[in-house]
Image (cartoon, rainbow, N blue to C red; front, side):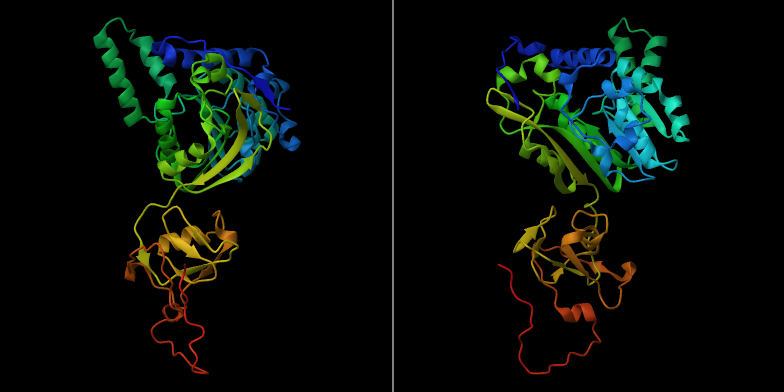
Length: 402
């Protein structure tokens, strides 16, 4: 049964809002690394196969609301945002194999110490070393904070000029020594951490996820969502911020954040039926979302088409293409590959219709992407194909979509 709580406003001064959020989160999770805090996580089932080799301390002191690790494949490079004690990273270490790699990102020194504590031991158990834990803010994956702190140690700040020099050094690190470079990651996961980021930084957070992913890469994010907007009392309560409540995304806005960042194929993989908590009548529950990168780019005409199997009469993709059930819909080469790729979220619903004779990309012309275009079968067959009319009835001509 969901826990029902009545919130109380505990921050009267708006100017304290930013400070209290960051410090409340940091302090509570530092304490969570020292001593188990069951209230920081939702009940989540993991595959026991991967938990057997993990130290009990990591299992007890890692907090989450879902299991994004089940959607990762061997050999991939993965970034875990807010890796905490490292449980998800060490599960992935086993799934990814020796050819894969997982990078855990966290801002909390106590959590980082805990995750690194067992790194060598677990590597010996699995037979290879494929984990890395780095210090950074998840909305700024270019800045290696440990490098910035090393500079600070050598250059203490006592004046505004020295502060300006530190800002300049941070900018240099982002540009010349980025922690995670552009388009180098297959999968970005996170487990109940995105909600802890201040609202004003969340757009940048999604842009960073998008930046580090390769074309065709994906984000798999488990987080807390709510069915209504949080009240001012909830938003101004540091206990509820650090407890993964106040920063929860409204369900539809969570999906829109991925859309606005440029992702496609956005889908809800899991949504808890029962709320985790109910506060002031607002339901908070866990949800896992997957989204893909790679719909941007030029459109080329190569006489390809797709047929949507149904059951809906028509559907619309993230580029505005309307795809009608049972019709040969004309699409560009980019969209054709997105819709028919075996790893895409659309593949099970789409029948690919390639041309009889493939058109080399260098001979392709620009395709004017329309929201709705039905391809004549003659185009698929090629200019030289002879159409034989057996009965004179035009009963099989392409139809119109409503």
